[in-house]
Each structure stands twice: as C-alpha cells, then as structure tokens.
Length: 199
Image 1 (cartoon, one colour):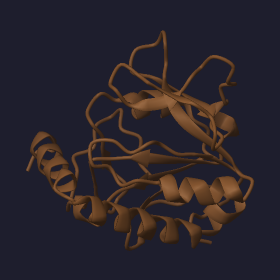
Image 2 (cartoon, one colour; image 1 turned 90 degrees about the horizontal axis):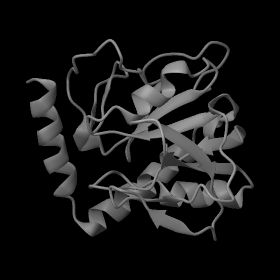
Image 3 (cartoon, helix red, strand yellow; image 1 turned 90 degrees about the vertical axis):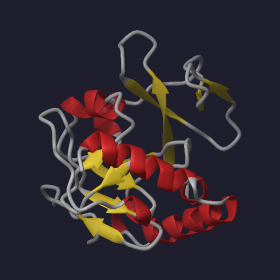
Image 4 (cartoon, one colour; image 1 turned 120 degrees about the horizontal axis):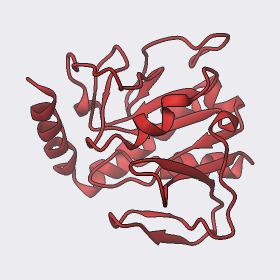
C-alpha cells in the first residue's frame, strides 16, 4: 500500500471513532505519557489541539500545566509557507481559529519559543510504523519546521493504536520520531544522544 492509500485509510479509521472512544483514548494516552520519565521530568513540552479525529492530548496537557510545566501549541507561521511557530499556552489563554479552522494561540502578546528551548515536541500523525516513520496530513508543516531542530529535543508522535501500519515509505525530507505513544503503549523507535524516552 502506498503512502497516499495509507493516509486515506487511517484518516477514515480515526474519524470513525465515537466521542466515547476518543475520550477513552485521550485518557489512556495521558496515562501512558505520565509513565514516561521524559514527560515527568522535562519542563517545556509542545502539544497540539486535536483535529480530524486525532488522538486528543488535552488531558495530558492539563496534567502538565498543573505540574507547573511550560506548555506550547503550534501556530501557523504568518509569513513562511507551511511552517509553524510554537507559542506558550496557559489554561485561560484565548484561542483563535487559523485559516484551516484549527484553534491556536494568538501571536499578539505571546512570545514565540525557540525550537531549541523545547524539551519534547508531541506531534499528531495520520499513520506510523515501529521504525519511527510518520505520515502527517501531507502539507509538511512539522517536517519543514523541525528540519533544523537540535538533537536534544525529543520528538514523540501521538496516535490511536489503530493508526499503526507495517511500513511507511520514508521520504528524504521526513523527520523520524524517537517514539510513538498510543492509548495502549509506548513504542521507542530510536534513541536520543544522552537521553532515552523511557528511562
């Protein structure tokens, strides 16, 4: 199956989940993340707001905020095509809809975080394999944004377990993940120099 067919299949799978199944998956995801030493001890974590059936990390973000961690959300870059900024988000901060109708923090009055200052970036995905390959929505926002990222930052994909596939054809511009976390388990794909996701 080629990447286009995988993307279509997996989007259908996650959209077919009921609201109750999505809520259950979000709770399971938070439990899995909270077991990770990297999630417990690192202080600056980028999340995302779920869209199009993505597994929802909102419960996990609430736990992180209550623990005093700095949480960030992606914001579409106003000038550079298909790139993202990451902006600090607090529980009561207002959100605005971007051009895709996805909520994000306003850039006005908010400071943009340096990518190198973020400890963990949690990425949404459409499909994944156990080698750390990820299929996104196809526009390349994360791949372009993270292409110059330092080696210290952990890249963790979040997904429903039903989004796993045997193999994804990796493209030269793809940024591989260190790990994938689902509502059921943590899958470590590759180590980080000087650090591990699970230890």
